[in-house]
Structure formats: C-alpha cells, structure tokens
Length: 455
Ligand SMILES: *[C@@H]1O[C@H](CO)[C@@H](O)[C@H](O)[C@H]1NC(C)=O
Ligand SMILES: *[C@@H]1O[C@H](CO)[C@@H](O)[C@H](O)[C@H]1NC(C)=O
Image 1 (cartoon, rainbow, N blue to C red):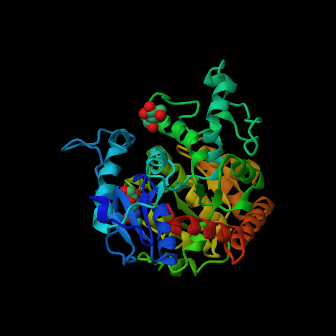
Image 2 (tube, protein in one colour; image 1 turned 90 degrees about the horizontal axis):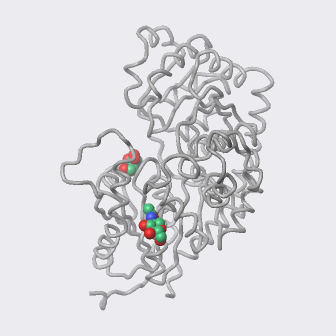
Image 3 (cartoon, helix red, strand yellow; image 1 turned 180 degrees about the vertical axis):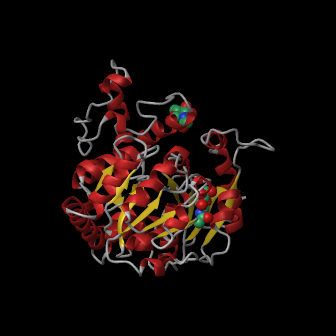
C-alpha cells in the first residue's frame, strides 16, 4: 500500500488525549504550526465525539485534517459514575486504535508519517515514532511543576517507601529542585496516593520514563516563569521547549462573546470585579454553592460567574434578584479576554494550568479551590512560591474564609502586593512571546523539527 506514498512536505500525525481540557492546547499549537508550515500536512487523531466538538463550525486550514479513532467503549455504553471509566476503556484500546486510523490517514493523504506530535500522556506514541524512525514531540498540557513531579516519581516513591501516606503528608519535597515548597499532600494522585495499579497512574509513570527519549517536550508555559524548574526540565530532556502562554500566541482568535461579558465588564472600575470559573470538568460541589453565594452577596463586590453543570439550579432563590445590579451569571465566557480585561481584580479558580497561564497573562491574582490532578500542586506554587494568590485553606469553600480572601485580594495591601507580583510575571510572559523572546525562539525550533522531512 505504501509504495505510492511520498513524504513531500511532510506529514505530522497529531495524537490527542481526547479528555478534559487536553484537546484545546494541542489543537491551538497545531493551528499555529500549520499556518507557519503550509506545505506540511497535519492529521489530527481523536475520538469521534471530540472531533465533532472541535472541528464543527470553524473554518480550518487546508492542511489540518481530523481522523476519528475508536473510543474503546462497548456498544451501548452507559457511564456508571466514575469519570475515569471512559478514560480507562480508551487506554485499553490504545495504541491499536491510533495505529488503525494512522493507516487510513497515510493512504488518504498519500504521505508517510514524518513526525509524531502527541499529548505527553500518550507515551506509547514515543514507541510508535521510534518504530517509524521519526521524531516524537510530546506536548504537556499541565504545567512544568506537575511534569517535574511525574519525572521524579521513582525518587519520591523511594524516599517515602517506609512511611504511610498519613505520616508523610506534610513533608516538603526538599530533594526536588523547583518543588522544595511543595508538600506530599499536594502531589497529583498516582504518584504516591490513589490506586497505583490502575491504568492511568501506570500510564503517567510510563510517560515519565519515556519523555527523556522524546525529540522535544513542549509545554504551555514560558522559561522565565520559574528559572529553577525550567533548568531542571532542560537538564532532563533532549529539548525542553516552553512555547506559551498559548493564550498570548493565538492572536487572530475571534472572541465570541455571546453573553456580552466584555461590554458588561466595561462598566466597572479597574481591578474591581471577581471572576469565578472552576473549569469545564468538575462542577462546584453542591455543598459549596450556598457558601459561595453568601460570600459574594455579603462582600458587595461585582462578580462574573461562569456556571457549569447543575450549579445554577443550586443557587438559592432570590440571590440573582438581590445581586442583579452587580452580578452576572453565564454558562460560558471568553475566559482569555475576560482575564485580560482591566476590570477583573480577582479570579476564583480550580487552578488548572491553562487557567493559571491565562490569569498570569491578564495579571489577575487568584483564589484557588483545587479539585484533582495537578491543581493542588499549582495552588501551592501560586500561593507560596510566587505569592500571586490565595489557596482555600479548608479544602472546600466556606463563607467567611471566602469573604476574607475576596477582601484581602480586592482591597488593601496584600492584594496590591499580589497584583504587583503577578504583573511582573505578566510582563515576562509578554516578553517571551515577542520577536526574539524565549517562547518565540522555542517555537521556531519546534517548527524546524516539524518541517524536517529527511528521514
Ligand atoms: C474538544 O474536545 C474535547 C474532548 O472531547 C472537549 O472537552 C472540548 O470541549 C472540545 N472543544 C470544543 C471547543 O468544543
Ligand atoms: C507501561 O509500560 C509497561 C512496560 O513497557 C507496559 O507493560 C504497560 O502496559 C504500560 N502500561 C500503561 C498503562 O501504559
């Protein structure tokens, strides 16, 4: 079959981890690469569900083509609660599902694969690239800190081998450069806690061993964000390429603002509005909805709340009416633009990495209520290492603690200090994406790898 296939300008197989917020950053990066390398073809592999959502109405560049892969779900699958279930089933079907679709893509496009660009989680793509004798580029969608923690999984497990989780919870990871302020309890599940024998933690462990073999490891971040962690990662990988913040590099993205958030923000004074969003994966637990509404009401601050899932039904009667002249609740916001709006003065967030990058790009101090994965680790960095926000101490949102951190963020010296510090990071981020900046140069290196077809 491959006899007639050429490589011409090259064919990059882009392989997504089609869950939670992993697809967006990968697709964003691919769009940028595809625009700069019109002679290269990019095939984009994800499940039908994901492709349908991401490739629906938008005009796409001629050189990006989606291909569906099997999701591994049995016929008539009905989710039984645990959100990890479809992920585990998907992983069972991997890599054969991708291999099958890549064959289809090679024959339809008529070019052999010359490079594999994958979500780093799918470490198996490194093996696939190795078999084909082509470069493997891995994109990390979490931040450089979580990546460092995964990279040191074996060291961490050995260090705490004779202690129970309870015994070492409060211990700092002093032995890992860049993570010395991070406590064991902040670590993502799957490193020390959780069921280490299930597919997902094993995949991440395999990832940490495979990444040093990658041609390049890319991350949505910038080198100056934290020089210590940048150096650790540079010394562990062949090429460590910070190419973000992606939100600052995706220039021509049209801001669809169907709920008129931006004109609404225009009415308020600089740094006066609270913006609330807990991301698209986990809605705020029902028991925290009332405490949050009470804190918002009592604080008197204007607020914009992006509400997901069933949260809206849990909002107490009368709250919307009583706060109507200073509150806005919507199902969706153009978050990058909202955080870049000068009226926003505090961001109540789950502290997913993408949100943190967007908050830095907007210079908005954070109030972090982490849920899972790398979010607790990110919160520790935001609060204790960078001093650009507060973590919710009690783990769950409680009225008076929220009220207090809102006030400390929006009025007074503490808030000013945090705003100054995040303003400095914002400045460094802007420099990184300018011509000659570190992220711009790293992107050029990435482009060179992607366009080199001499295999
Ligand atoms: C892209 O696909 C992912 C995974 O299915 C989904 O979570 C996300 O919302 C999609 N993005 C858009 C813009 O629809
Ligand atoms: C992890 O790697 C081992 C050894 O290569 C392999 O047997 C196992 O299937 C992998 N598991 C996952 C979930 O990636």
